[in-house]
Length: 252
Image (cartoon, rainbow, N blue to C red; front, side, top):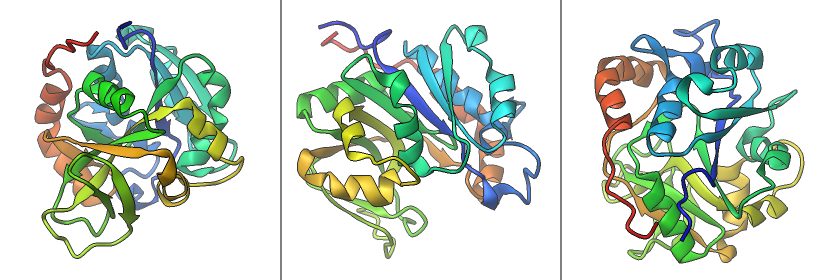
């Protein structure tokens, strides 16, 4: 099998308004909010590059020029970055659909939220996706306080049967960690316009096969002032996790 590195593209969703963070990051695009001394989005770029994924598509929107000026073409991290810029907020699915012209090669692609980090073995997730042969695979984490995130309902084999917007905080439940592997045919199910992956697309393609793989490493979402403050305290741990050696992919 051809190695996944150098073949699969990673789409980073970096166009959100960051409304909840305005009180602490008033004049900067959310993905550029500093964690330690570096922009948060750089952590994700470094994590991808460290695991051999070097073809990136950055979906920008709010303060897009700031993001593009900061990251450039990616050469300083030994990656290539292409840009898909929204002229108006289009939601997570709308942003992916807009980037479709940049995803014409390859049968699968990664998608990552630009405001969350999870320690993950990308090659393992990609391999899991290809073995299941569904339309989408999600990274999920077990979390007690799931009321902010909603939950993913799944079997022990990882087959996703549904999504629940709110939860009573049952510690056995899983949340969507914001990293996906998509078969390219998911683009056929996303209409043009403003639309959400989580609320609109995932529930509508359950019969096409959605699977989830549990992750056990560090996870953080900087979408609220409280979690952004927590990220500052954890930034050393986050960078260590981004560079942590992952098990070899024996199938490659």
